[in-house]
Amino acid sequence: MGSECDLRLQSDWYSPTRLHDSPVDYDFPGDRFIPNRSLMDLDQAHGMLTNRTKQGPPEKNSHTEFRRKLENLTLDPEGRQFQMLVFRGSPKSSRRPAHLIDEMRRSVEENPIRKPLRGFPKSESRILDAPNLRSDYYLENIDWGKSNVLAVALGTEVYLSNVDSRGIELLSEVDETDYPASVSWSEEASVVAVGYKCNRVHLYDAESLKLGRSLDCHKGRVGSLSWNGYLLTTGSKDRAIVSHDVRARNSVVCYVKAHKAEVCGLKWSNTGKILASGGNDNVVYLWDVRKMGPRQQLYRFNDHHAAVKALAWCPYDDKMLASGGGTSDGSIKMWNTQKGTCISSTNTKAQASFGDYANCGSAF
Image 1 (cartoon, rainbow, N blue to C red):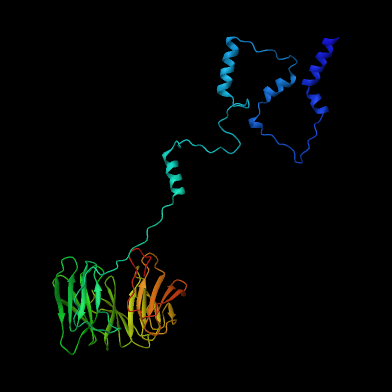
Image 2: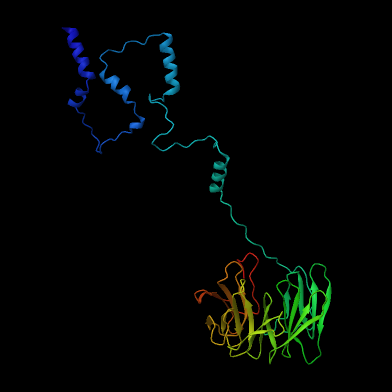
């Protein structure tokens, strides 16, 4: 009778029904517990619930000892099997990553590389004597060629100064009634164009230093020049813009007269598709190379309050143009030439005589 009672008690204790019949009340509030089945050994749990045999003292034999060691290697402290893929957040590991790329990526994320600030020299690297250099806002007296040779107009003469060899050569000279008003190197630095006060433009060979051609197409001082391949565009005090094909006998391919005053600045875009012109009428015009005419400009910008001479195209974005105004304006404006809008305007509190972008394209 006693053994029957003990067996029934054991049966009730291990029976799943007994567990359901006696629910446990918890004092703390909360929602249902949703277990993670991937971490549960259901077979072991079922066996422990349904086993009617009392667990006696463990048998000390070789099989039991082997099983104990195997469980120590394959089970965690809670009696669960180690799993490779677990549905839970992995703990932070102090071990080194297996892949070098992971270590490099972590190093970059923890210590981001800061781009060093670009330094500008605090003093000049070289000083060149420039006697008789005309101080005139409307003249373009200096141009730096691709071959690192500087063309400089001094008085009635034009000199070439080689920056590498420090050699200086006389390119041209005129009488006292005339003077060079603008100089410009071709894109390949093989030709130097010189615009004069007396309405003409001379083309000189950079190696032989000889006059190759003379262009007579203006009725006033030629103070602005800009190359576009074999196309040379000239701007004058007569308010005209003329484009020349220097290979053709009849060089004039386009003649435009839109500005109300002297043409102060000319600049072709990097792709050679758009020409920007600035004048003493405080206006900037944009021209399409395929259809240049008196009333065929792409855009007309009149936001400046003084003559516009400084023009520069962004080297990495051909739709960005910078323009600088004279003394009574003193601003540098950035234009979106695709939309015809002014992006920004910066007051320099001084006249902008010349403008160009740095090689990196991030400084003007």
